[in-house]
Image 1: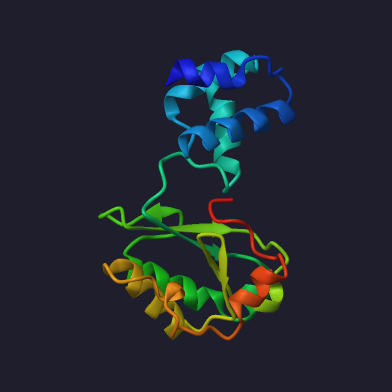
Image 2 (image 1 turned 60 degrees about the vertical axis):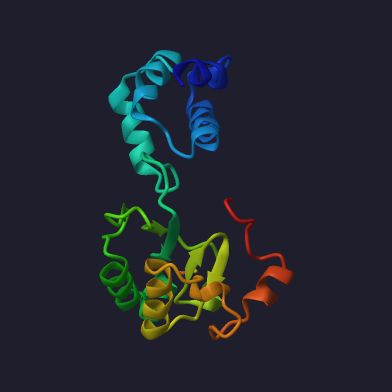
Length: 181
Ligand code: FES
């Protein structure tokens, strides 16, 4: 693994832009940034492992562990908060069995805090596999989370689960990122 990390960061120079480039490359390759890569990164960018760790910890998009089977992204932006996203967060945490930015004990679900990406007309929303679900009610959030916890098809992928906003329209308009983006 360290050999591959060394290949990925070879030629990058010690400035902040290149550090982020290195972190993105490593995460793209391994789905997260292994702790073992920190000394290598520190040497490449002429700094300390602590500074590298601080950078990784600062950006919520950078992962320090492999993702769970199902990653649910909860928007922490102001429009979502004003429209009741705090209740949705509590419902997701209780139903999925994990707190924000952690995974359930069985590794089936993970809750991630994300920032507003400009899709506030869907507030309050969550994102799942690159798709948007919103405006979301607390009961819809619970239904969705329960479907992840069980072996059933996630509610968002069921044809009879209809959030207020037509997800397909969003995708057609090119507002939704590709799965895994
Ligand atoms: S505040 Fe949630 S999408 Fe903008």
